[in-house]
Image 1 (cartoon, rainbow, N blue to C red):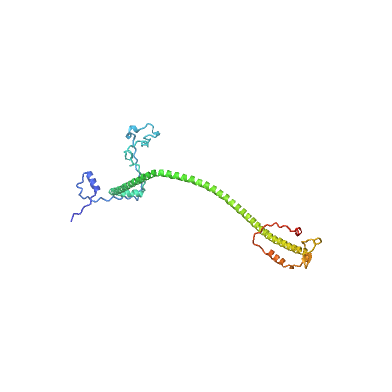
Image 2: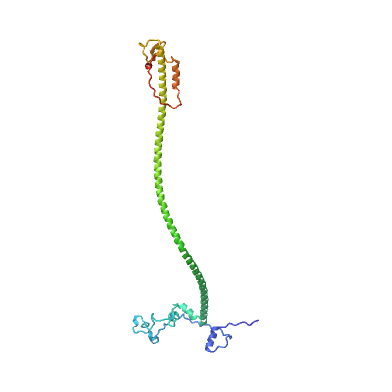
Length: 326
């Protein structure tokens, strides 16, 4: 079996090498002695006060000195450097010294813990913190590289989008031009629609007035038609009555002529208002109805309606006395 590897105290080895007493790095060193605990219960704790380094005037370069320290120069009245001193290397400049300026403001208990902690343990803590800080720094660097790659990808996408945006410019202008033309066309359509609507309203009003006038004309036509029908009926009735009266008077005159042929005409004038009854001339009122069968037939024929259109006749009364007798 292999030989067990011993643990090396690097801090003690470094100290021995510095003092010239160390031998080999493989030589084991005894474990460090424990720190002596100081009893501070009976004594008053004094807060830690760090001494600030005061730079004397003789250590300040001659070019940075001033004769009038009250005007914001490099050195004030106490000999400290002012804000306008030159630090060419920034935080890594030798004049950028924080050793006497950082004050952790620890309380007495924390100061007691620090005083009772061995130097080797403090160095181990510092080494561990440095290792952790180094690991965190490496991780941050790795993350920074990833972020840089993402940024490069985003920049590439931004360039592509910029190119697309530049290509979309003419399209946007063409679309905007088309939109403006569409707006003009829409305005024209609105104007024409309003004009068409006005014309339609006017035509609707004219149509309503025409319908009203047509209804009035239809009513008037129906009234005239009814009046014409009634007038035609009266005309037919009057024509029948006139024909009947003319027929009766003609037959009556024939009978009187037949009766008067055998008698002298000096004392027996022809009278339409008279008729022959039983061989005598009597007034027509004295002749009873139905004496002559021809009168009944004539009344029936005159009372029957005829479908033939009425013919306007100019009936003139006929006087048998004007007929010459041969």
